[in-house]
Length: 346
Image (tube, rainbow, N blue to C red; front, side, top):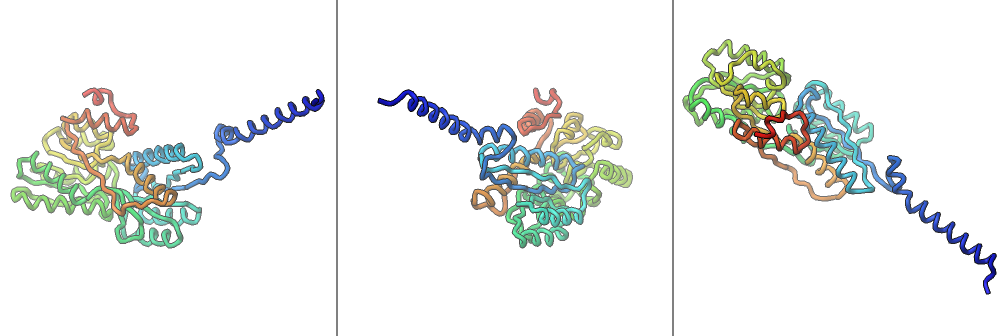
């Protein structure tokens, strides 16, 4: 027979073993509750460098990147994806290049960049890749660099869409101007090229000029004002970006519907100009996906070891008063919060 003392020791031992199992079995759970990653987890730091923090399209991309990083980190318990936002306040290609160099020194695992100037960024990208840091571009490419992929539109085709939409609004005749933004940005120059190529199909349309500027509302408005004073018979603006609509100043220099406007991007801040007929068509880009798709591509390449296509295209959506409600609801689904309720119920 087993003595009562021995039985007591066995019970005590079992209780001790059960306690140890509970302690170590719950360690990962407790670590996550304390904000710690489980033992053996890997942190991937992705440095994101857009053109300008002052431009809301890039803040949208930042939101998309952070949301995708959070989703991936939740999906893979041993992976923690961190987005390091390192974007100049205003466009500055030299500063972007320096940020790339510093990010490599700081030990970033990957870089995502929208290039303000292709020539200035190509060397910095190549140096980063040569040091073992993969680089992906979005929105504005550096196609001759060693970046592994680019996510964005076919900018020449986008420019053609702008021109064709504008031609229909002015009955295929009259003087128009091109608002060009940054003169060194590869993507914007290709959009201008597309506008001019499409304009050649309309013999009664005259382009009075392409007008470049710093990519801020104030600079864009100043350019528009000067051009409209010089060309009082101007019938339309073909805009490769939506800078004049990033504030309230557009209302001071143009009458609703008098000069037709087709512009690229359709962010919440721009939608009121559609409603009030200052702007007739916006070509909406899924700017939220600039961050979402690029982060996913980086993780596929460096963590999951999947093949990533070199060119990943996005499609634009013409936004007018007819589909303003549907586009507004799409923006809300992407996480935008500053959309007037009246648009959401249209």
